[in-house]
Image 1 (tube, rainbow, N blue to C red):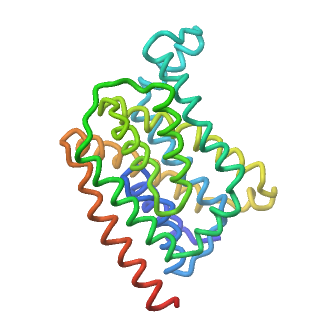
Image 2 (cartoon, helix red, strand yellow):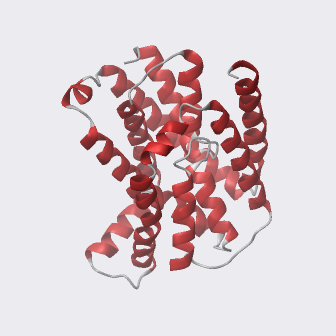
Length: 262
């Protein structure tokens, strides 16, 4: 387990990079590799729970409206249809998580793979500069965006970046694509957390102490701030600018892996 300073650092890194379209999983894997840290997978899962709290806090009105529509079995309303699309969009990540869990986990130890994935993410982000749409999310859109979320299981591919880019490429209206991206993240993160807790031994769970609590708190606070910042950038039409960071960072990681790791 990591010390409290390292835990807070990783929590801050998770909070900043989870919802900005630059891949928190890639940054966390690289940071732990470069700093020689060995945090258990359950610790990383806990950090994602922190940034999930940020989503629930930022979108609480939308979450309540969607939950209310489901409880009333009102699937014809805007938020009732949104709930159905979230269920449809969650199917790809569930299948990918079950079928490719071990293969994806192995990529976390490969800086080269992470660097290449970050450069691919940059390309996906850059093309968001062009599409414009006016449609709501339909079933085919939900599956396509859900497949993009499944792709984000790979470290270096951003969940928010890939799903927003996928929605815009399907000509979904910008604000609807943004909202759907974050609503889609909720069941995926909840499911991943529940799975990792189920698969963890009692001793591993018991070993998550004050360090984890501090890291989760930091990830939640900075995650909320990151969503606010992302919303302003997205509304200004500069979402594609994150592509440049991903290209540069990804190329640097690939160069490092090639030159120093063989």
